[in-house]
Amino acid sequence: MLSRRCLRLHGVRRLHASRALRQREPFDASKVERMAEEVDVCIVGAGPAGLSAAIRLKQLEQESGREIRVVVLEKASEVGAHIVSGAAIEPRALNELLPDWQSRPGHPLTQPATSSSMLFLTRTRAIPMPHPPQMGNKGNYVLSLSQFVSWLGGIAEEMGVEVYPGFAGASLLYNEQGDGVRGVVTNDVGLDRQMRMKDSFEPGMEFVAKVTLLAEGAHGSLTKTAVKNFNLRANADPQTYGFGVKEVWRIPEDKWVPGKVVHTLGYPVDYKTYAGSFLYHMADRLVHLGLVVGLDYANPYMSPYREFQKLKHHPYFADILSGGERIAYAARVLNEGGLQSIPKLHFPGGALLGCSAGFLNVPKIKGTHNAMKSGMVAAEAAFEAIKQESESPADMTAYEDNMKKSWVWDELREVRNIRPSFNTPLGIWGGMAYSGVDSMLLKGRVPWTFRNKISDAAHTKRASECKPIDYPPFQPPLSTDLLTSLALTGTNHAEDQPVHLRLPPGPEAHKAHVQKNVGEYGGLLGRACPAGVYEYVEEEGKPSEGSWEGKKLVINSQNCIHCKLCDVKVPTQDITWTVPEGGGGPKYSASASAFQRITA
Image (cartoon, rainbow, N blue to C red; front, side):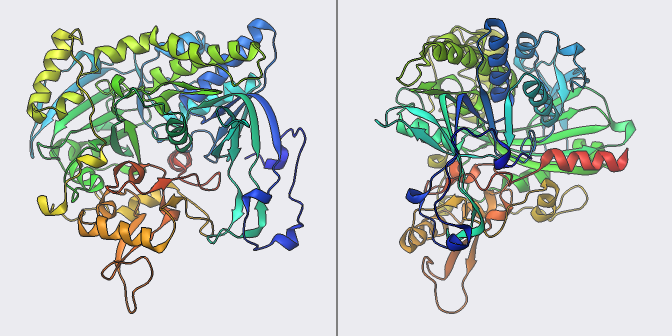
């Protein structure tokens, strides 16, 4: 990982105080003088959208002869480390971005999808059902998304893009008038839990950019800030989310069908909950298995993790996984709102890309191709904006205009009513029926649009209105307790750093959180979090500040795998996910690669 001191620095500024004097002194951001880097385009997030934007910018540089400086900031310790293996990728955008990709060395698209099927699961049976056309995978590839973005990152660097893993975008830089973005500030490192400066303290850097592109993935922290500050959702529905819990297994040769793709509905969730599972047979006897649960689920006693563990004991999956070995575990929220939940895509000085905007096609369960296309279109608008050499914040209006003319918009318009149909008076069964008719016959050619009216958190019912769920005990090796699974993520955060999962300050805010979430919602986060971050524990002895009726909230932030569920689902909407020190979090690519080396 590149050190902060390894950057090409233009006009470095430092703290006036010596290290010895500032050791363990309280941190005061107003007294910090930061290193400043001037760039043409600063991209936050080295995923498919961000890297596609970076590559396209360098292609435009080569075509025009106009040199531009492009920087990509990535909070993971290496490109791909926060992306779990396993995806079925539609190569449409890749064909446009890199027409010669098949001849490039080391590309990971080596396993074509060979079949697609849909099953309805009862408790003991797997019943074949009609396969919606959007879920077909002819011409697609089943691969490790972590390896895919790592490969794209290598291409970007070869073209002259500066990619900096371990640099988390912590806040936006604004112009003097406060009405435009002029870059990003990375997070301060070397602070302890009390916000005091350790001897390792280094202030975050300013990346001063003509254009700032946010490609953080679903529910990114800078995206959340930009949407709020520039009112980007004024004419859009609330974004809604699904929650994917996933694992990678190496299975016996006789159970492995390279390129096979399976999707399921039904078991293990009840008929009131929107959910489905997927199984991708990748190369090298690896399979990627996951369960996606709509975060609009009502019952606070539900645990997506426990539902997923239960799924693996279904006879269909148990037969495939028996005799295999689990090598990776992950979880992440994903956009489900569709076209009607896409906010305004640009703001003065920048734009939202990929899942930061919400371009996932829910019926396809695919978003990589749309994310890549958005990055390419944004790059073209950014390049033109830079050429204007204006003193005003860059105008990225052309990006949104061109996205609405692209095949991404056509694709999302066609399926706009499918996911929201499950939240109409039709209910789950009616939603399935409507989706079938819309997929096969209507194809979105109707005068109505179903709306996403409220947030996922607002769908949650009080515990008194719901029945507790009695989950079966874990049965290793198919199902294990949460901390055993967490060990497979490779997640790591320095314990003596500020908690990056923030409640409003003060003991009264903590007390109000516990009172509402325990007293009315049965301690939802204690079950919903897939990493054991949140615990509502009984106090011993004298009650502490922030407790309520003998209960207090403990945040094990070192366990966090950056899934963003808490920020989305907590009923009180009082938890804000912020970036921890750069390089912290899961290391999905490392855990899978290590196992492959051992078994090779």
